[in-house]
Image 1: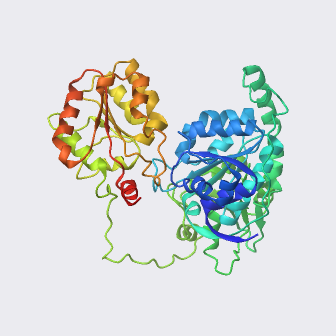
Image 2: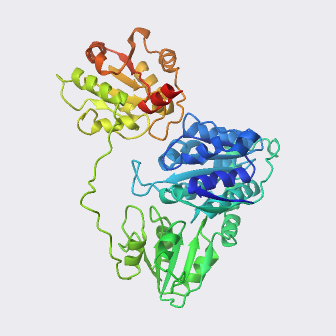
Image 3: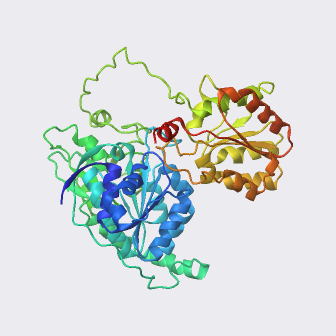
Length: 529
């Protein structure tokens, strides 16, 4: 088969397609977005009519994949790490329903928070759910792992978590393809009660899940993704998880490390290999991207018999990404000279694009709130979060998807006035509709601004699920029609837009203002077409 030059994300997508994928489900979130985007434009996926449209959020994506698995087909779910929080309910329960057709839950973690609110490590979710997990060290492994993950998923009737991190997701390397497998045929689960989590059935399913844990360890012990490399100096042994193996080997130009290495790519941890290395060495250094997941487990497992070094004892930083220099320091190797950044290169914060509709929205909002001062605007996650920065200084919070509306309702119910929420159209579809219903039910005195630029702009111009539907959704939820106002955020409309915002601030109840103008980038595309 031909060799391809692929991002880590794209390698996972191609690997899943070549392993008989029938459906990809997910919500765009950096650094996972390119997985489904690759499938959407892939000629073979188009020819096979592989399902490849975006879901409204990660929870619905996980549940849709469960539905495809119930029907016997192979499915992949994609999200970033904080998206797994949204999908946690069906994800955790899928450990008890299990799988019929294979399911891969692909989660892209973001150590150093390049575009995220936190640094959480998704491997903890796999351990929590008693579910197998995989973590590729390079693009070739990212391509190969979906094939094995589908096999394990169907062998044990259990979803498999595939965890990557930003550097692997967004770097390229050559990938050798394998033969393309046929898609599964439709077939029901052998056990008709498998997906019925009534307590009587769930208790049985949980016992089954517990009973296969030794089998999953055995799979890891025999996995080609878990490899032991001999070393001449056994005073120290190194455990390198996923991409961290590359950071280690970049310090050895000849490709040979003097210390024994256990490279980990599949979980649960391989017990036999762990026992072997701990019996042969005095110290252990654990290299892992993200949180001290393996380090914490081994500290408890090994007790005081062995010194375990890593993120917990200060050998490596507790936060942020690894890199070869940090690994050198942990190994006691001399630091390499660093390149000085030229003085001509000046750091600058991110900013809203020139011509962005949010600029005129924030100018109007600031003018309408001038007499109240600051501290009254709850925002959400999207391009519009940049409204926090100068020269706008227009928003005061950003917590998680949909929290702008929920927090504005809670603050209003506490007596804060005015209480204003700013949320994007795609985020409103993702997590904003349910808190809007709360506001309507509690008759909260809140103004909700749904910034409709007709696209999911921040993650790469994916279609928004609510385009053309926002007013109807708000009416259906119970917002009074006369208090659903559409404005056009342009400088020529500034005075009129300020007037509309002030009018809705004066209304004691739930108001929705929709500043509607296409993102400048899709506006240019529409103009060209």
